[in-house]
Image (cartoon, rainbow, N blue to C red):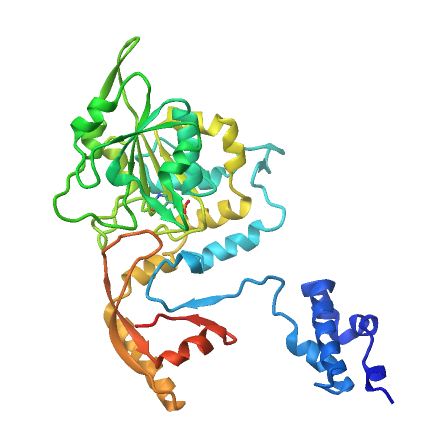
Length: 410
Ligand SMILES: *Cc1c(COP(=O)(O)O)cnc(C)c1O
């Protein structure tokens, strides 16, 4: 008899009560995929027909996404390829709450439409009181696009040649700005740009001066840059007397207030106190939240950005609003915890993990090492850290095991 006759049919397996829970959780398509794969193995004679249901169970994906949870053991706190900042438990909980119907744009008391994301906006104002107004968009690149379009389309953005940054994956901030229809006026040189360079470039056509934090590289040696304080005093003659040129500052990492462990990393509160008119920043770098772009600054500028038609195309989802609010008002983020974890604690953890592995016959040693912020933040900063050292051939099985672990090879 042909063994293939004994292979259970797809319909029968889909209707099998053993797979009812999987169909509910994953949907028919994914269960069907696992069924077809198991049937093919039986047809090729790799498994007997009666083992098909078992093979289906064994190959069902754990969830309906190809994204897999990864343990970031790279020593880069924010790894762009691993999704940058991991969210706090509070932010994950907020995501789950907001994932159904929610009052994101609705006032439950009056039963009327309400301002979208009002909770997050007041949390952001409270976290950075020097900001008169705030706006949240899709990411920092979107924040820059919105600022350039609303404040400088058809006009000049003055930027230092030392701050023409490539963010990553081939994307460059100057290209992004030019794509909005703004003109770039480059001033100074790669290593030195003075206030006078900016002063001689500003004029009637100036939209704003842009300062970009060189967040992923360092220029060392014979260098000079103009401070926000100096730039914020620059004025141009206008029809009704002199007007100040707005200084927009892309701080990159999203620190709202100074971080003592990272003294060279700019923060929004200080930049605003120094005279910046508008700050742009990422939500998923040192702020430790979901992907988002933050705009903080003078009320008139933020209002004109909020009302610009493009704002609608860049607005964030309720999930982002929920996770960002919990990041701001909730407990310290995993990123902040990792940054502040005493090295002694890291050594203890590495030591006990290495001992545990050794008990299981794995050649593992606890070693001192260095960690970095990563993800476009605090270039040149190394944090004393501790690691578990394994032989290099472990890299692949660790990455592809049931719990993916991504380390680094040294
Ligand atoms: C990371 C970074 C960006 C881009 O931010 P996204 O949130 O990834 O869009 C822009 N400017 C600077 C200085 C950065 O560090």
